[in-house]
Length: 281
Image (cartoon, rainbow, N blue to C red; front, side, top):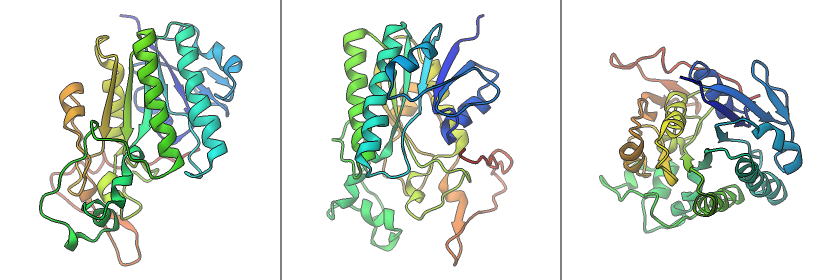
């Protein structure tokens, strides 16, 4: 059986790098990146330049689109270039070259604006005010209205809408993953990540499930966080459709008096599997 050729945009970033590292034996990877990527063929170009990126899509079976600007979630000009123009260019280059599937890396920030609603418990959960949180709360699903609280999240909403358009009009398969909080340290680094933490292992697994999904999967939105006690994002749809089962949880860590996060000992926990460390280059 021929190994499928997969182009990863943003392969020098944290998530792109994890995908290439941990799925290297399963796919034949190449990269589209502004900086060189060692170990796999790499086209160096900015995704805001359609003509420059087109060669990267030749003879490619699938694309994982993770390239984006994340340094300032409110910088409109940077997000316009990378998140809107760049995402359109990736979809268009894939269409031109007949790529069968693009896995789009979206974000949980498409709905984090629900934390502003004082009639809901999500703001208290994000702030770590658990005494003000009821025992049970309603889960926000992929079918609930989008509610971003940053320019970054709003641009990802546009990317999802564009994915729907390319899927409907050009019959492309574009699953969108609303990724939780993935950190270089592979653990929560802020109090609010108790709800949104997504481990390296769970992140790579959900991307792999999207790549392996049957051709009949054209467009869908999948929420992805690890099995966190205080999550308010529903992941049942992702589990049901993709067969994805998160293995990790923010509950395996605790915060100390100085604000640092440390792993909690558990006899059932595979500590070596949770120990992936990678710097975002």
